Image (cartoon, rainbow, N blue to C red; front, top):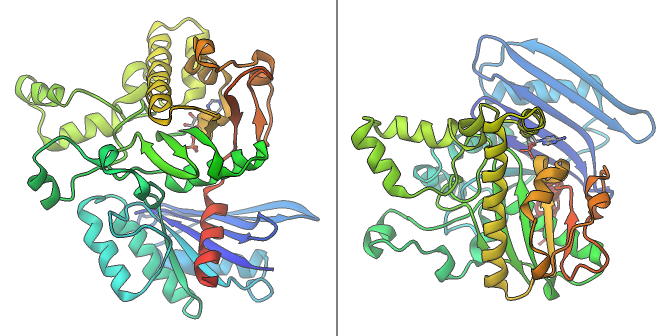
Length: 401
Ligand code: AMP
């Protein structure tokens, strides 16, 4: 059995999964929240094939990431599975921003840590938190390799025409301004799972992956490689999201700075936290938004229309870039669970060979499934994403390399 511990460290939270890579399943997972606040929260869940799942919760003060790892080790010891009988061969870390430097999973060395730190300028909210998790994990697991798996790495295959912004090239180069793209781990996992479901080599397929969760991005995948993606230098560009605007005319910001007195921080807050479907309707969660639409709320209706109109525009643009679309895959919280979003996003595309089957689209399921008609030239799929399993696989591959 090859067991990998996957760690996703935020500034005040730590998520972990202990994964049996060959079986493709989690043995345990946990969430430690409110690190550094007066009262923290630890949740540990054991997934047992024989006995089902058991969950334990405690509230305690967790001053920093070192303490969080200590709580995690205590939880494994108290509730299992035992790390002595299931020792991780490596720890895989999710790192949001790998810049142009990191194109694949990378063994963490002191130099790699310094380079992740240097990328802070591009991801001030995420990279320092990811790094804090790596440092603490190395203390907790000093004898195994630690592998950094970057959200941006899958998109390093983008051609220059797709990643270059049309601004002064020297200024852009000096400040590392270009499209990096995010959700790469998910786009990679889903494109491969879709190919497997279709029974065709990923190298022969051209597809569009729509990762629609709290954050949302589209990716054109040709022959298994990312060739275009909607998030940009930061995870703000592209599709409409829960609280993020996605694409907007940059001059709107200049206008608001002039007429409404918004400074840089207020503009940042507006675009990242107060926009998207929240800004349009007052609801950030797609379930609430659809509920409000169903009860006739006009703002919610417009928000759903704007959200799906944008997706359709990207599908069209990416179809043109790909030249042919064998499959469209919906994934993440909204993509996997919202029939109305899938239906509206692909409405009117029959002429392009995209034909949804209404009943298949409405049927619930937790596995990969086809929701297009048998006659549809493009297969439309729902593919549950599993970023932790993908990180575990890539971690193991990097260790065995
Ligand atoms: P993720 O970032 O992938 O965890 O997705 C989280 C989002 O998925 C939530 O904010 C919800 O808007 C959405 N979501 C989860 N379950 C459902 C559901 N049954 N129907 C519609 N949206 C859902």
